[in-house]
Length: 421
Image (cartoon, rainbow, N blue to C red; front, side):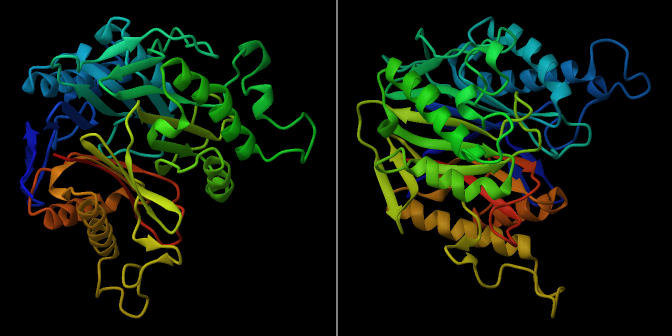
Protein backbone atom coordinates (compact mmCIF):
# COMPACT_ATOMS: atom_id res chain seq x y z
CA UNK A 1 0.00 0.00 0.00
CA UNK A 2 1.24 3.55 -0.67
CA UNK A 3 2.48 5.63 2.23
CA UNK A 4 -0.07 8.29 3.20
CA UNK A 5 1.92 9.94 5.99
CA UNK A 6 4.75 12.46 6.07
CA UNK A 7 7.50 12.52 8.70
CA UNK A 8 8.22 15.99 10.10
CA UNK A 9 11.60 17.13 11.43
CA UNK A 10 13.16 13.64 11.53
CA UNK A 11 16.13 13.08 13.85
CA UNK A 12 18.74 10.50 12.90
CA UNK A 13 20.24 8.30 15.63
CA UNK A 14 23.40 7.20 13.79
CA UNK A 15 24.67 4.80 16.43
CA UNK A 16 21.39 2.87 16.24
CA UNK A 17 20.87 3.24 12.51
CA UNK A 18 17.36 4.53 13.26
CA UNK A 19 15.40 7.75 12.83
CA UNK A 20 12.79 9.36 15.08
CA UNK A 21 9.91 11.43 13.68
CA UNK A 22 9.26 14.52 15.78
CA UNK A 23 5.89 14.76 14.08
CA UNK A 24 3.69 12.95 11.57
CA UNK A 25 1.36 14.69 9.10
CA UNK A 26 -1.41 12.29 8.07
CA UNK A 27 -4.09 13.83 5.86
CA UNK A 28 -6.17 16.11 8.08
CA UNK A 29 -4.19 15.28 11.24
CA UNK A 30 -0.87 16.05 12.84
CA UNK A 31 0.59 13.85 15.58
CA UNK A 32 3.48 14.89 17.80
CA UNK A 33 4.42 11.87 19.89
CA UNK A 34 7.03 11.80 22.64
CA UNK A 35 7.38 15.56 23.06
CA UNK A 36 9.74 16.59 25.84
CA UNK A 37 12.25 19.29 26.69
CA UNK A 38 15.28 17.51 25.28
CA UNK A 39 17.23 18.40 22.19
CA UNK A 40 15.81 15.48 20.20
CA UNK A 41 18.24 12.59 20.33
CA UNK A 42 20.83 14.49 22.38
CA UNK A 43 19.41 15.05 25.88
CA UNK A 44 18.43 17.91 28.14
CA UNK A 45 20.13 21.21 27.28
CA UNK A 46 22.08 23.20 29.89
CA UNK A 47 19.32 25.80 29.98
CA UNK A 48 17.06 23.24 31.66
CA UNK A 49 19.49 21.49 33.96
CA UNK A 50 21.24 24.71 34.99
CA UNK A 51 24.46 22.68 35.30
CA UNK A 52 26.65 24.66 37.74
CA UNK A 53 23.80 26.76 39.19
CA UNK A 54 20.59 24.69 38.82
CA UNK A 55 18.46 26.73 41.25
CA UNK A 56 18.99 30.08 39.53
CA UNK A 57 16.09 31.50 37.52
CA UNK A 58 12.79 29.69 37.04
CA UNK A 59 12.25 26.27 38.64
CA UNK A 60 13.84 23.51 36.55
CA UNK A 61 10.49 21.84 35.76
CA UNK A 62 9.17 25.15 34.44
CA UNK A 63 12.23 25.59 32.21
CA UNK A 64 11.69 22.04 31.01
CA UNK A 65 8.06 22.79 30.13
CA UNK A 66 9.11 25.87 28.15
CA UNK A 67 11.60 23.80 26.16
CA UNK A 68 8.95 21.13 25.60
CA UNK A 69 6.47 23.63 24.18
CA UNK A 70 9.18 25.21 22.05
CA UNK A 71 9.74 21.77 20.51
CA UNK A 72 5.97 21.37 20.08
CA UNK A 73 5.78 24.76 18.35
CA UNK A 74 8.47 23.66 15.89
CA UNK A 75 6.51 20.53 14.96
CA UNK A 76 3.25 22.44 14.54
CA UNK A 77 4.97 25.11 12.44
CA UNK A 78 6.36 22.42 10.13
CA UNK A 79 2.73 21.74 9.14
CA UNK A 80 1.72 25.45 9.22
CA UNK A 81 -0.33 24.87 12.38
CA UNK A 82 -0.65 26.65 15.72
CA UNK A 83 -1.47 25.61 19.27
CA UNK A 84 -5.06 26.70 18.61
CA UNK A 85 -5.33 23.76 16.18
CA UNK A 86 -4.60 21.16 18.88
CA UNK A 87 -7.43 18.78 19.75
CA UNK A 88 -5.87 16.66 22.49
CA UNK A 89 -2.85 16.86 24.79
CA UNK A 90 -1.85 14.08 27.18
CA UNK A 91 1.04 14.36 29.59
CA UNK A 92 3.06 12.02 31.76
CA UNK A 93 5.24 13.09 34.66
CA UNK A 94 8.08 11.47 36.58
CA UNK A 95 6.76 13.01 39.80
CA UNK A 96 3.98 15.20 41.17
CA UNK A 97 6.47 18.07 41.63
CA UNK A 98 6.52 18.56 37.84
CA UNK A 99 2.77 19.00 37.36
CA UNK A 100 2.06 22.55 38.55
CA UNK A 101 5.10 24.16 36.85
CA UNK A 102 4.11 22.41 33.61
CA UNK A 103 0.48 23.55 33.97
CA UNK A 104 1.57 27.16 34.49
CA UNK A 105 3.45 27.14 31.19
CA UNK A 106 0.67 25.26 29.41
CA UNK A 107 -1.86 27.93 30.41
CA UNK A 108 0.43 30.61 28.96
CA UNK A 109 0.83 28.67 25.72
CA UNK A 110 -2.83 27.92 25.12
CA UNK A 111 -4.23 31.15 26.53
CA UNK A 112 -7.11 29.51 28.36
CA UNK A 113 -8.18 27.25 25.47
CA UNK A 114 -6.50 24.03 26.52
CA UNK A 115 -7.70 20.92 24.69
CA UNK A 116 -8.98 17.88 26.60
CA UNK A 117 -6.18 16.42 28.64
CA UNK A 118 -4.87 13.48 30.67
CA UNK A 119 -2.20 13.69 33.38
CA UNK A 120 -0.66 10.84 35.34
CA UNK A 121 2.59 9.79 36.99
CA UNK A 122 5.09 7.18 35.78
CA UNK A 123 8.30 5.58 36.96
CA UNK A 124 10.91 6.87 34.52
CA UNK A 125 11.55 8.56 31.16
CA UNK A 126 14.33 8.18 28.60
CA UNK A 127 16.51 11.24 29.24
CA UNK A 128 18.37 11.81 32.53
CA UNK A 129 16.59 14.56 34.42
CA UNK A 130 13.44 14.36 32.28
CA UNK A 131 10.17 14.83 34.20
CA UNK A 132 7.63 15.47 31.40
CA UNK A 133 6.51 13.62 28.26
CA UNK A 134 3.62 14.79 26.07
CA UNK A 135 1.48 13.36 23.26
CA UNK A 136 -0.22 15.97 21.07
CA UNK A 137 -2.82 15.76 18.30
CA UNK A 138 -3.80 18.66 16.03
CA UNK A 139 -6.40 19.08 13.32
CA UNK A 140 -5.42 20.61 9.97
CA UNK A 141 -8.24 23.14 9.33
CA UNK A 142 -10.16 22.62 6.12
CA UNK A 143 -13.79 23.58 5.52
CA UNK A 144 -15.85 22.40 8.50
CA UNK A 145 -13.00 20.34 9.90
CA UNK A 146 -11.19 22.21 12.66
CA UNK A 147 -10.65 22.22 16.41
CA UNK A 148 -13.92 23.34 18.01
CA UNK A 149 -14.01 23.78 21.80
CA UNK A 150 -17.45 22.79 23.10
CA UNK A 151 -19.16 24.52 25.99
CA UNK A 152 -20.98 21.72 27.81
CA UNK A 153 -22.13 21.27 31.38
CA UNK A 154 -20.13 18.72 33.37
CA UNK A 155 -20.90 16.78 36.52
CA UNK A 156 -17.54 17.77 37.97
CA UNK A 157 -15.47 20.92 38.41
CA UNK A 158 -12.42 21.55 36.25
CA UNK A 159 -9.54 22.76 38.42
CA UNK A 160 -8.40 26.29 37.63
CA UNK A 161 -4.82 25.00 37.68
CA UNK A 162 -5.69 22.64 34.79
CA UNK A 163 -8.17 24.72 32.81
CA UNK A 164 -8.79 22.27 29.96
CA UNK A 165 -11.95 22.27 27.83
CA UNK A 166 -14.71 19.84 28.86
CA UNK A 167 -15.01 18.60 25.26
CA UNK A 168 -13.62 19.34 21.81
CA UNK A 169 -14.81 18.29 18.36
CA UNK A 170 -12.95 17.99 15.07
CA UNK A 171 -15.35 16.93 12.35
CA UNK A 172 -16.98 13.70 13.48
CA UNK A 173 -14.31 13.08 16.15
CA UNK A 174 -15.00 13.96 19.77
CA UNK A 175 -12.38 14.35 22.48
CA UNK A 176 -13.22 14.56 26.20
CA UNK A 177 -10.80 14.79 29.13
CA UNK A 178 -9.38 11.80 30.93
CA UNK A 179 -11.51 10.97 33.96
CA UNK A 180 -10.66 9.77 37.47
CA UNK A 181 -12.89 8.99 40.43
CA UNK A 182 -12.07 12.36 42.00
CA UNK A 183 -15.07 13.67 43.95
CA UNK A 184 -17.54 15.81 42.05
CA UNK A 185 -17.92 17.86 45.22
CA UNK A 186 -14.42 18.32 46.62
CA UNK A 187 -15.91 18.81 50.11
CA UNK A 188 -16.86 15.11 49.97
CA UNK A 189 -13.58 13.84 48.49
CA UNK A 190 -10.76 13.31 47.46
CA UNK A 191 -12.48 10.16 46.04
CA UNK A 192 -16.18 10.50 45.32
CA UNK A 193 -18.37 8.75 47.92
CA UNK A 194 -19.86 6.58 45.14
CA UNK A 195 -16.40 5.41 44.12
CA UNK A 196 -15.02 4.32 47.47
CA UNK A 197 -15.60 1.59 50.01
CA UNK A 198 -17.72 2.52 53.04
CA UNK A 199 -15.44 3.76 55.82
CA UNK A 200 -14.12 0.93 57.98
CA UNK A 201 -15.45 -1.89 55.76
CA UNK A 202 -13.26 -4.67 54.38
CA UNK A 203 -15.86 -5.56 51.80
CA UNK A 204 -19.16 -4.15 50.37
CA UNK A 205 -17.62 -3.41 47.03
CA UNK A 206 -14.41 -3.91 45.05
CA UNK A 207 -12.38 -0.67 44.84
CA UNK A 208 -11.39 -0.87 41.16
CA UNK A 209 -14.93 -1.84 40.15
CA UNK A 210 -16.41 1.03 42.16
CA UNK A 211 -14.04 3.54 40.54
CA UNK A 212 -14.50 2.15 37.01
CA UNK A 213 -18.30 2.14 37.20
CA UNK A 214 -18.32 5.62 38.72
CA UNK A 215 -16.11 7.05 35.97
CA UNK A 216 -18.25 5.51 33.23
CA UNK A 217 -21.68 6.26 34.68
CA UNK A 218 -21.12 9.58 36.44
CA UNK A 219 -18.48 11.26 34.30
CA UNK A 220 -17.94 9.71 30.87
CA UNK A 221 -21.55 9.04 29.87
CA UNK A 222 -22.85 12.50 30.89
CA UNK A 223 -19.96 14.23 29.09
CA UNK A 224 -20.51 12.25 25.91
CA UNK A 225 -24.27 12.83 26.03
CA UNK A 226 -23.80 16.58 26.46
CA UNK A 227 -21.59 16.58 23.37
CA UNK A 228 -24.02 14.52 21.29
CA UNK A 229 -22.47 11.07 21.66
CA UNK A 230 -22.82 7.89 23.69
CA UNK A 231 -20.74 4.98 24.93
CA UNK A 232 -21.23 3.08 21.68
CA UNK A 233 -19.48 5.95 19.88
CA UNK A 234 -16.24 5.42 21.84
CA UNK A 235 -13.61 3.98 19.50
CA UNK A 236 -10.43 4.21 21.58
CA UNK A 237 -9.67 4.15 25.29
CA UNK A 238 -6.39 4.45 27.16
CA UNK A 239 -6.87 3.13 30.67
CA UNK A 240 -4.26 3.98 33.28
CA UNK A 241 -4.04 1.55 36.22
CA UNK A 242 -1.67 1.65 39.16
CA UNK A 243 -2.17 -1.96 40.38
CA UNK A 244 -1.54 -5.05 38.26
CA UNK A 245 -4.00 -7.13 40.30
CA UNK A 246 -6.83 -4.78 39.23
CA UNK A 247 -6.62 -5.80 35.55
CA UNK A 248 -9.16 -8.68 35.46
CA UNK A 249 -11.76 -6.90 37.61
CA UNK A 250 -11.35 -3.72 35.57
CA UNK A 251 -11.85 -5.69 32.34
CA UNK A 252 -15.00 -7.27 33.73
CA UNK A 253 -16.44 -3.92 34.80
CA UNK A 254 -15.38 -2.06 31.63
CA UNK A 255 -16.82 -4.62 29.21
CA UNK A 256 -20.14 -4.67 31.05
CA UNK A 257 -20.85 -1.11 29.86
CA UNK A 258 -20.52 -1.80 26.13
CA UNK A 259 -22.28 -3.87 23.54
CA UNK A 260 -18.87 -3.99 21.84
CA UNK A 261 -15.95 -2.43 23.76
CA UNK A 262 -13.64 0.05 22.04
CA UNK A 263 -9.99 -0.60 21.26
CA UNK A 264 -8.49 -0.45 24.74
CA UNK A 265 -4.94 -0.18 26.06
CA UNK A 266 -4.20 -0.70 29.76
CA UNK A 267 -1.18 1.38 30.77
CA UNK A 268 0.51 0.99 34.17
CA UNK A 269 1.24 4.09 36.25
CA UNK A 270 3.31 4.77 39.32
CA UNK A 271 1.76 4.51 42.80
CA UNK A 272 0.36 7.04 43.47
CA UNK A 273 -0.42 7.76 39.84
CA UNK A 274 -3.21 10.33 39.75
CA UNK A 275 -4.40 13.65 41.12
CA UNK A 276 -6.06 11.77 44.00
CA UNK A 277 -3.40 9.82 45.86
CA UNK A 278 -5.80 6.94 46.63
CA UNK A 279 -7.10 6.76 43.05
CA UNK A 280 -6.57 3.55 41.13
CA UNK A 281 -7.56 4.47 37.56
CA UNK A 282 -7.92 7.15 34.87
CA UNK A 283 -9.68 6.66 31.54
CA UNK A 284 -9.37 8.79 28.42
CA UNK A 285 -11.39 8.22 25.27
CA UNK A 286 -11.83 9.21 21.65
CA UNK A 287 -15.28 8.96 20.09
CA UNK A 288 -16.73 9.27 16.60
CA UNK A 289 -20.19 10.81 16.49
CA UNK A 290 -22.98 9.67 14.17
CA UNK A 291 -20.81 7.36 12.13
CA UNK A 292 -20.45 3.62 12.49
CA UNK A 293 -16.91 2.43 13.11
CA UNK A 294 -15.53 -0.85 11.83
CA UNK A 295 -14.51 -3.05 14.77
CA UNK A 296 -12.20 -6.02 14.43
CA UNK A 297 -13.22 -8.64 16.97
CA UNK A 298 -11.21 -11.75 17.87
CA UNK A 299 -12.07 -14.17 20.67
CA UNK A 300 -14.78 -11.76 21.93
CA UNK A 301 -12.22 -8.96 22.33
CA UNK A 302 -11.85 -5.81 20.23
CA UNK A 303 -8.33 -5.77 18.80
CA UNK A 304 -8.80 -2.67 16.64
CA UNK A 305 -11.32 -0.08 15.51
CA UNK A 306 -11.24 1.72 12.17
CA UNK A 307 -12.89 5.11 12.64
CA UNK A 308 -12.88 7.43 9.66
CA UNK A 309 -9.28 7.79 8.51
CA UNK A 310 -7.68 6.38 11.67
CA UNK A 311 -7.12 2.83 12.90
CA UNK A 312 -6.79 2.41 16.67
CA UNK A 313 -5.29 -0.83 17.95
CA UNK A 314 -5.75 -2.23 21.42
CA UNK A 315 -2.54 -2.49 23.40
CA UNK A 316 -0.27 -5.24 22.12
CA UNK A 317 2.27 -7.43 23.88
CA UNK A 318 4.05 -10.48 22.52
CA UNK A 319 1.29 -12.66 23.92
CA UNK A 320 -1.94 -14.48 23.25
CA UNK A 321 -4.74 -15.77 25.48
CA UNK A 322 -2.35 -18.33 27.01
CA UNK A 323 0.38 -15.83 27.90
CA UNK A 324 3.72 -15.01 26.30
CA UNK A 325 4.08 -16.53 22.82
CA UNK A 326 6.85 -19.02 22.10
CA UNK A 327 10.47 -17.96 21.64
CA UNK A 328 10.23 -14.38 22.91
CA UNK A 329 11.10 -14.81 26.60
CA UNK A 330 14.28 -15.53 28.53
CA UNK A 331 16.00 -18.85 27.90
CA UNK A 332 18.00 -19.91 30.94
CA UNK A 333 19.66 -22.68 28.91
CA UNK A 334 21.29 -20.26 26.48
CA UNK A 335 20.75 -16.65 27.62
CA UNK A 336 23.28 -15.37 25.07
CA UNK A 337 21.48 -16.92 22.10
CA UNK A 338 18.59 -14.45 21.80
CA UNK A 339 17.57 -10.89 22.59
CA UNK A 340 14.07 -11.19 24.09
CA UNK A 341 13.16 -7.50 23.72
CA UNK A 342 13.86 -7.68 19.98
CA UNK A 343 11.92 -10.92 19.66
CA UNK A 344 8.97 -9.31 21.44
CA UNK A 345 9.07 -6.23 19.20
CA UNK A 346 9.06 -8.41 16.09
CA UNK A 347 6.14 -10.46 17.40
CA UNK A 348 4.15 -7.31 18.22
CA UNK A 349 4.92 -5.76 14.82
CA UNK A 350 3.86 -8.90 12.97
CA UNK A 351 0.59 -8.99 14.89
CA UNK A 352 0.01 -5.27 14.30
CA UNK A 353 0.64 -5.64 10.58
CA UNK A 354 -1.83 -8.52 10.35
CA UNK A 355 -4.49 -6.39 12.08
CA UNK A 356 -3.71 -3.46 9.78
CA UNK A 357 -4.08 -5.62 6.68
CA UNK A 358 -7.44 -6.92 7.92
CA UNK A 359 -8.58 -3.29 8.26
CA UNK A 360 -7.26 -2.25 4.84
CA UNK A 361 -4.30 -0.37 6.33
CA UNK A 362 -0.54 -0.70 6.52
CA UNK A 363 1.78 -0.39 9.51
CA UNK A 364 4.03 1.84 7.36
CA UNK A 365 1.40 4.55 7.92
CA UNK A 366 2.02 4.54 11.65
CA UNK A 367 1.16 7.88 13.29
CA UNK A 368 1.72 7.05 16.97
CA UNK A 369 3.89 4.41 18.63
CA UNK A 370 3.77 4.54 22.41
CA UNK A 371 6.04 2.04 24.12
CA UNK A 372 5.87 1.04 27.77
CA UNK A 373 8.88 -0.96 28.89
CA UNK A 374 9.69 -2.66 32.18
CA UNK A 375 13.34 -1.64 31.71
CA UNK A 376 14.27 1.51 29.79
CA UNK A 377 17.84 0.25 29.36
CA UNK A 378 16.34 -1.98 26.64
CA UNK A 379 14.98 1.00 24.69
CA UNK A 380 17.93 1.19 22.23
CA UNK A 381 17.38 -2.45 21.29
CA UNK A 382 13.64 -1.84 20.95
CA UNK A 383 14.20 1.19 18.71
CA UNK A 384 16.64 -0.79 16.59
CA UNK A 385 14.09 -3.61 16.22
CA UNK A 386 11.18 -1.29 15.35
CA UNK A 387 13.33 0.49 12.79
CA UNK A 388 14.20 -2.87 11.26
CA UNK A 389 10.63 -4.11 10.90
CA UNK A 390 9.57 -0.74 9.43
CA UNK A 391 12.46 -0.61 6.94
CA UNK A 392 14.01 2.46 8.52
CA UNK A 393 10.93 4.69 8.47
CA UNK A 394 11.11 7.51 11.05
CA UNK A 395 9.42 6.36 14.25
CA UNK A 396 6.75 8.56 15.95
CA UNK A 397 7.83 7.19 19.30
CA UNK A 398 7.28 7.79 22.99
CA UNK A 399 8.88 5.53 25.60
CA UNK A 400 8.01 5.26 29.29
CA UNK A 401 9.28 2.86 31.96
CA UNK A 402 6.57 1.11 33.97
CA UNK A 403 6.53 -1.07 37.07
CA UNK A 404 4.68 -4.01 35.54
CA UNK A 405 2.92 -5.42 32.50
CA UNK A 406 -0.14 -7.62 32.65
CA UNK A 407 1.44 -10.69 31.02
CA UNK A 408 4.26 -12.47 32.93
CA UNK A 409 7.50 -12.22 30.99
CA UNK A 410 6.35 -9.34 28.78
CA UNK A 411 8.98 -6.61 28.49
CA UNK A 412 7.16 -4.16 26.24
CA UNK A 413 3.62 -2.94 25.54
CA UNK A 414 2.84 -1.01 22.34
CA UNK A 415 -0.07 1.34 21.74
CA UNK A 416 -0.31 1.78 17.98
CA UNK A 417 -2.34 4.19 15.85
CA UNK A 418 -2.30 4.09 12.04
CA UNK A 419 -3.57 6.38 9.27
CA UNK A 420 -5.96 4.83 6.75
CA UNK A 421 -6.30 6.41 3.32
